[in-house]
Image (cartoon, rainbow, N blue to C red; front, side, top):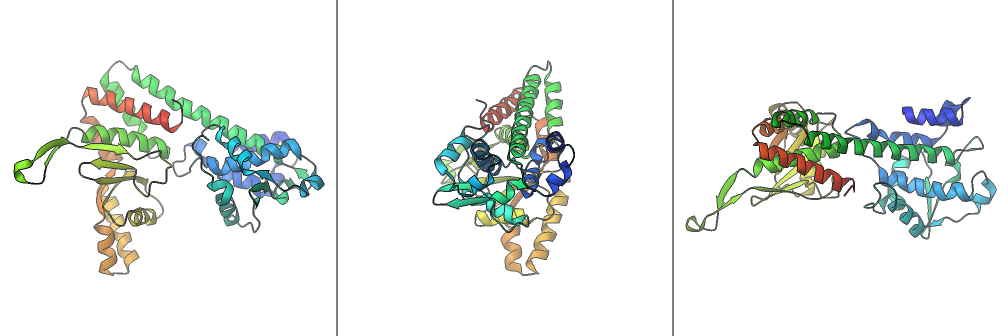
Length: 353
């Protein structure tokens, strides 16, 4: 149980808070979806799922709190009302409708519950009554307090990073700015922060590289490499985080996981087009390449067609080590550009502009 959730439960149920939590699949589900505030890079913010639940809880608590029999006859709240509520919440401007329609129920059932959390009926939505009560105690207001505290903690975390960037910009020397940037590149960095920082570094690294290309030796033209970010960090981009012009290279930001299925899935998504993986790790690129090669070998069962399919699709591995090395090679102006890029894309990501 996360510390802030325990604090709220202790306040609401001082004599039996553990019993309430242990007998509430809803509170347990919220707990497992709220790891982002601790900087766990493997945990997404899950705002779509949390806000889908919160929107129904919000109206339910006003209309049906502790009115079990009355709620049993309720047919649900209209989608437009709930979705409009979600969109006006912190970070909710870009949310899609998947959570209300299917995602929450799919995950909730995966947590060994055989009932849908959200009841869907002809465009109306309600929460299953069994998850709103624990031994005849209506826990909706407690769940609301937990979600509101989670939102508050996310806001504090987001603005703390903005404050760090402001302090970084006013450091007196370029060397101190560089060293501060380097400390931001860690294996514990939040996923979206690492993606934005790595993009800023790569963008400024590659812009100093020139290539010559054309349709014939007589018609070659000179062009610098340009890296483009494809969208928000949680976008459904089909396995492409950055794209390079004019080479057409694909980049995917990832990390070292329990296995390398996610890497192979990203390759499958782009039909085995070569991908450069930017990996949030201090392990050497050689060790990552070897681990990935071993995984492909085991996955293939020795079949060459599978081995070639994936090995030929891995263009390059870039780790934190390369990012730091390349950042140290940047000019003073490029360091300032990295900082400005991080600030701009972070504020865009968090809708702070």
